[in-house]
Amino acid sequence: MLQTVTAISKEYPATFALSFLGLFLQIAYSVYFMTVIAGIYDLFYDTTTNTAPAKLTVVIVFCFFSFYWTSQVMANIVHTTICGVFATYYFMKGSPQGMTKSPTIESLKRSCTTSIG
Image (cartoon, rainbow, N blue to C red; front, side):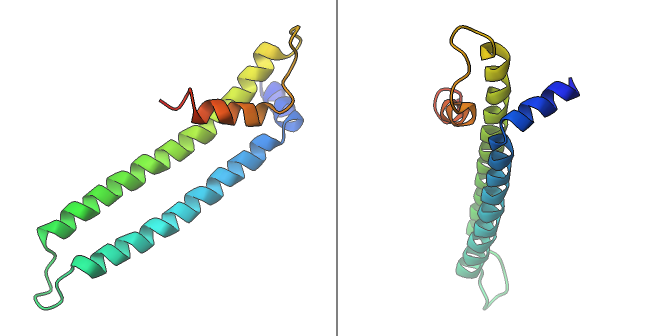
């Protein structure tokens, strides 16, 4: 099984590129999120009494939920895309239709449209 996975990964190196792209996007989104949290904290925190109002707590909880949700969607798109490449290889290799020209792009399209929800 490991030999098969290695062979497919070598044959379609775009799976590695997609993984690194997903990693880069996740890092960029995390930096953006930290900036947003710092801005929200600066906007809502009361420096005269050194207290955090309830509004701040609600907004930060919502932001963390949004961050977690979006991070999981990005990770699952990458996961589903790579699974699609392997499934395409499994079902289409040796079939009369043959393999598509770029299974990674085709799988990414499916992951972002019909397989997203």
